[in-house]
Length: 562
Image (tube, rainbow, N blue to C red; front, side):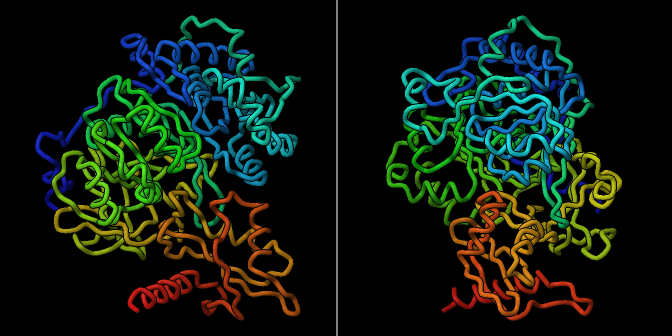
């Protein structure tokens, strides 16, 4: 290949093809914006406004609190929170003192929490009142020494602050401070707001963001401050380059995911925009927030767009204040693109990335006049991408032919925490082997057509079938089990379980689903169950998951053609 990055010629006019990164870390970017625009709103949360000056103050206070709890440079701080002000305060405070964040999905079950806390070596946890029962049940099985509990009403405007505990008794747990258990609001107010020395360092570890794999074992992706900063700057260059301080962005992507952490939280604060925090996205809540704050940029996954396009208020409201949409998690269909453009004819940027690439690695560039349904765009600045043969992964495939997508560049992780074998398997000579299958079209736009690792993306969440299978096999009536992703009009994909029941036993679909709900986060629970006499296997007895998936796709294709 004469030009190692042939897609650069397809960047929109005026978009830089090379870039020298500014070596500023996330906490340093907050300090910079707070000094320049102290009165600008940084966070909005259910009527509460927190300015950049106030956010910097809170970060300094909590940084001192964490230090007083014994957190030192390099220590792991687990963050078990939805998108509320405390998650931003905790993230920037921990990063500022050189600690390493461990981002934890609030939907995780006790089993999943126990594994992640232990795998990450987390010793301090910041969690939410309604999540604490799960934490208390497994605390003694972990290395956790200190737990900081946040309340939903810590940062609410009057009168919601006073009414929430009364109106939402089932979502509010009274936590009593005791040895090793602290209340966030009580703790933070004890400390001075004087500036804390910024110990964040460009080449040092900043966070562990967890992802799964073919073995079903969740892996902590090691991401340095440089990875996040380069990812943030790539977003500014190619995905949302026209933001200005004070503009508003809906923070719909959860911050415990790479996209939310980097593209929304990190980028938003870097640019000094106002982030409106959405703790649990729904069409109704999003529409209500749009009416209230009139956001300039609206991010979402395909299922969010489907929800919104089915919402009458959204489809009839004035969206003249919206400057752009940002979509991720799965390619957008032409129908969604066209319907969104009918409502507001602005750029709808779609991208593709992994936790291992600190989020977006490719994107349909801002200002691009091409409309290519199904594409995930062009590789971003300073990112290299190749399509390799599926068998060995050493032969680069010609343009137009499918193979495994691999990436190299300043946003690619150096490996997985305490997992040398998985690191060697997935990262070779600096190239990340994604396990995703794709190809470049004639214009060097990337298409993702399959997943070598059998991962399922259901409603924007990554689901790993092997992990689900492990739970299915724990049911005493199950002899064999295999789960696969099947097409779903709303979620993009959903999980279907194929079950061979033990001889002499009877088992219902609902009984199996209820069993899974006790052990898995809701988005991982199979939505469909099919009982079969046997599962397809190889000559050595390995279940052919791909064969089941092919059968389901064929069945769906026949139904669509009728």
